[in-house]
Amino acid sequence: MSATTPAPLLSVRDLRIVFDGRHGPLTALDGVSFDIAPGEILGVVGESGAGKSLTGTAVIGLLDPPGRISGGSIHLDGQRIDNLPAEAMRRLRGRRIGAIFQDPLTSLHPLLTVGEQLVETITTHLPVGKAEARARALQLLKEVGIPAAETRIDQHPHQFSGGMRQRVVIALALCAEPGLIIADEPTTALDVSIQAQITSLLKRLCREHGTAIMLVTHDMGVIAETADRVAVMYAGNVVEIGPVEEVTRRPSHPYTAGLMASIPSIHARHDLLNQIDGAMPRLNAIPPGCAFNPRCGRAQPFCRDVKPGLPGHPHAAACHFPLTEPAHA
Image (cartoon, rainbow, N blue to C red; front, side, top):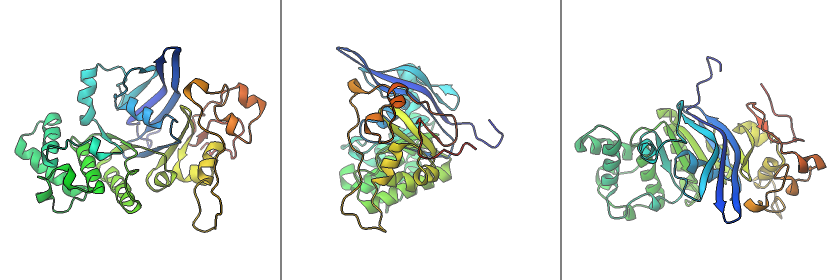
């Protein structure tokens, strides 16, 4: 690693997750690897069932049985965390890893004011008293753009709009100044104008705090607007990863190209939207070789027999016959 390249804050290597069933284990993640540097936003995108949310769940240590990590490792700031005892992982969450989920109502206690929830989180993870914690909670609400924060700190979640609740959840995630935030579909339930405000807020917080963000979404438009790099997932694998501008403008994997082609252009008229034929395979029916081969117009017999690896380049695609040759520099 060069002197100019920061060490990754989060390093996921060959992560494998299985779900134990009556007929044996089903592989949900099959060797996922990526890094996120301090102050970087990595977008993780793919269809429902690709494994993107499952990856975030594993990183934050909230994977429940029958799911389990069967291989690989997760390191946070050089410390391995996937094998920590439950109590040690609980202490890590909130303090070093924050989380923003799709529905803010699931993250907020309906009977407590937002101030009480922020103060409790701050005093749990930081050595401060209640008065100092309340002052910090008020500052966080202002930082995430809550108007009249001095009044709203004593209100309950139901008194906030969806966009304002999501801002409160972001403040909650920032309480203990974590180095990493897992943001799982943080804008999906919001209208387009509020989405833009939330993505702008995430970028600003990333820039000002040096926080690393793993942004999980199915929306390539949100990725293009927000992320520095993007990892495209399909059937439990990362099929393409690289700088967001390169991946969106010059996709190498046919699946990525299909995702990009499905986004309508405002500069052209469309009678029908482009789509990728077929569907994501079920866990018990993932084909051998390249999992995308049944839906790929470029598939050759070799693709049906040999699973492609993901080269260790800044822009890489797990494809035997890529559309463009990724830049290796």
